[in-house]
Every structure is written in C-alpha cells, then in structure tokens.
Image (cartoon, rainbow, N blue to C red; front, side, top):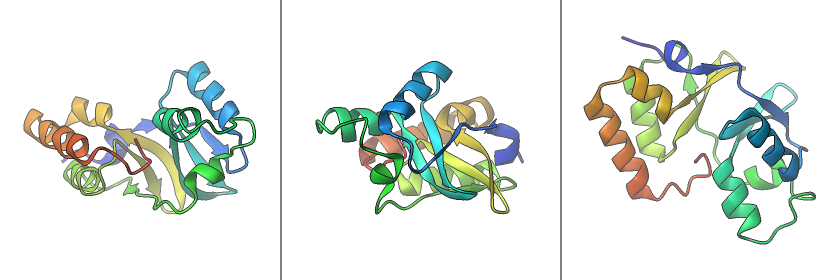
Length: 145
C-alpha cells in the first residue's frame, strides 16, 4: 500500500510562529501554495492556510501586519500523519478531523504536507469522494483548510 511519504508534497514551506499574516500571505502568493507549516524552533505548531488568512484575518477585519501565525493557531489542535502511515489512515484522519491537509512527520521532523490533491493522485476514486464529502459536510471549521 502507498504511504504518506510516497504521496506527500515534500519540503514544505516552514515559517516561525512570530511570522505576520501579511508575510504568510505574501509567501502563499509568491510560492503558489495554499498553506505553510508553522514551527516554534523545531517543534510543529500547525498549519496556516489561505482560508485562515481570508476568514480569520481579512473577513474579521484584523490587522494582517500585527496578527501572527501564533495568533491564528492559538487553541487549535494540530492533526498530523506519520510518514510511513498508509493512505487509508491518512484519509480516515482527514475525514475524522475534517481537514484538507496534514503535516507529515517522521519522528519529530516535518517532512511534507499531504493534501486532498496529493491523495487524488494516489487513492481510488471512492476513497477520495468519501473524503471530500466528509470534509465538505463538516464545513471545514478546523483551521487546517
């Protein structure tokens, strides 16, 4: 069976917790990505997505220059998948937590991000349809959009 490591997007963009949302938005635009991994030193804190920027900062009329990644992640659970876990486990985790992306960890290191798009290239159509339905039905209020 295919593992998260085989399906993930490797070398994720990692930013420190004190990074402003304005700088995160610029990074998302410049790199053409939908999420950045946030770490405090070597310790994973979570993901900040383009949806987080739009909903939690722009729509809430917060100042993107003074709002940080840490502000957005405060009180959130970070859901991850192990690099050697199979895709069925990844799909189950995404469905259970209604998230579209998972940081992939190997030991205590972030080695990639596994997204719905990555899964669409590697899992069967029925699994992907079920995942998309469960995440969409949940409204994806998890913050790992």
